[in-house]
Amino acid sequence: MSAAAGMMGPVTAEAAGRTPAELAPPVLAIRDAALGYGDRLLWSGLTLDVRPGQFVAILGPNGSGKTSLLRAVLGTQALTSGSIEILGEPVRRGHRSVGYVPQQHLADRGTPLRARDFLALGIDGTRFGLPLPSRDRRRRVDAMLDTVDARAFGRTRIGSLSGGEQQRLRIGQALIGDSRLLLCDEPLISLDLHQQRAVSDLIDASRRDHDRAVLMITHDVNPVLDMVDTVVYLANGQALVGSVDDVFTSEVLSDLYGTPVEVIRARGRIIVVGLPDHAHEGHEHAPHHDGADH
Ligand SMILES: Nc1ncnc2c1ncn2[C@@H]1O[C@H](COP(=O)(O)OP(=O)(O)OP(=O)(O)O)[C@@H](O)[C@H]1O
Image 1: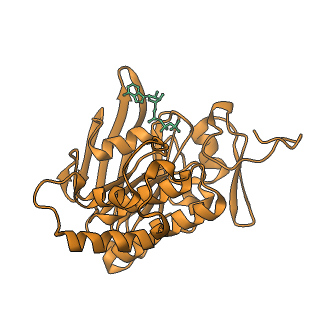
Image 2: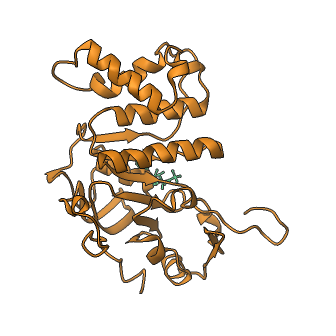
């Protein structure tokens, strides 16, 4: 199979022998999409269906257009060509069925918002119409504080919380609404291993228990290997779509990068060796012979 030949196309639920729930119409349908800025094309040829409960990992080197893809799905960035539909409607900004966990950045230390008020913004903060009655609202916030293990700091100002604590709240804010599609931009970055596990388990539970579809940009596929249905790999102007086994082969990645790349599987992990210098971001990679990581 050739990466240059384009792509493995949308992985259909039927082909993967999925359950009836997963045979539902796609939450997200991307058709022959391309995205660039001015004369610079970041990627093209992206066609993807994402159904309820499916988990899609977006990978690729720095600057390959991963965040731009999420922005296109959020409706804040226009495609150069192609189309995106969410629940059968053309994408638009502020869709209430879309939850978003932005790239991690620490809240200002002086931010006066308390953790529980930050979570509550996910319920009605950006919505029109009547807010939920305050008792229901309080109940939902309490339940989400428990889910993200944040009850102990519910009344603390978010600016004085650690990066990991803030990240759990960000995910709680995205999960507390009724979203059908969750977009996460590197939610595991700068978290310790224990927190990485906790955050990925939370996201996994939300798709299993609530049939949410998840699109996650991740720096390394390994922490989410057991959740991923589909990989979108952006590199060299191309958009490769397939299962982990389809995409992570020496042949496919060598073809994509136009240079020999070796994919090694060791102790259940995927290690990519020989990536071009500019493309190291996005993978666990083997150490140099001098022992240093490249
Ligand atoms: N609004 C914009 N106008 C022009 N160029 C942009 C704009 N937004 C992003 N870019 C450029 O497009 C390229 C892709 O950016 P993007 O943030 O989508 O990449 P990425 O794959 O998410 O990168 P990283 O892994 O570093 O987060 C970058 O070179 C970036 O500078």
